[in-house]
Image 1 (tube, rainbow, N blue to C red):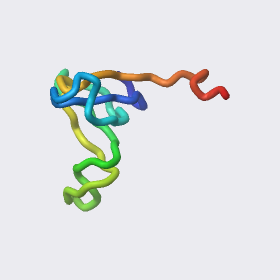
Image 2: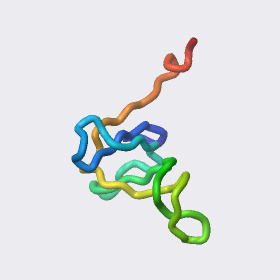
Image 3: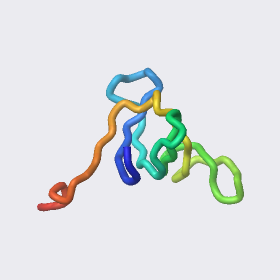
Length: 76
């Protein structure tokens, strides 16, 4: 997993995933990685929790799929 990868996450409810995030910082501790995501709950400005576009830390065990875009993906 690298910065900018699209990461589909699940909490075991659906094998195809429950939520889509973007990797902000790859795993460094072998257990978690940092994301930026929308329609989610997390820390906002001022250290307050809210719902919207947030930065989060997620567990690797909840990753269903990781997708990496290639330059040709943007060709029309």
